[in-house]
Length: 252
Image (cartoon, rainbow, N blue to C red; front, side, top):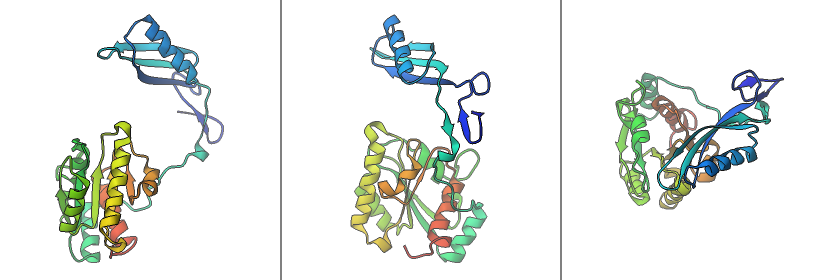
């Protein structure tokens, strides 16, 4: 991004402040000249003008994928951007263990799963499995955390029962499949099931994560926290001890 006056910025492509952007999309039409013209027309209506078609490829029967490059006149006011800021300190594994040992005097129980029809375990495994992600160990590595990974395609009743059986302090749910907002529907269903199954003081902390979640929607979806793309096991572990031990005390 090229910085303009004050907090106002515009997209950066070839030179500072030129407003150049690249967009990609698929249209339900076979690849021909008319399809390419339709792609440029759509880009124009999106505010890309002039729009240059730089890539087009047939994607199966009757679909074409396009990449368009061009200029937009839109500006972004950084002072008006609202995001969920991290409101807890990031701790090392040894610090997390020490806080749990001192504050709970027992292991902190974590149950994780992919719910509904979602079979993508990459996200939940990256957070829970000892091998972790990008060189950072997962929660199974933390000596003071008792981790139960239920895997994929877990029903909401199964998750609630596992949380009750394991006396879960926190439930972590990963959702990658997002067609027709399945991740939002599944999250609302899960939150409602826990509210119905357990009294407020006994419910586990509900945490969801996935690349398509809006982190500001936690309250609307009925969960305690949402983590987006790029989240590390250390961030999740630090949040859990903040929310369950140091931030609000014990006794959920």
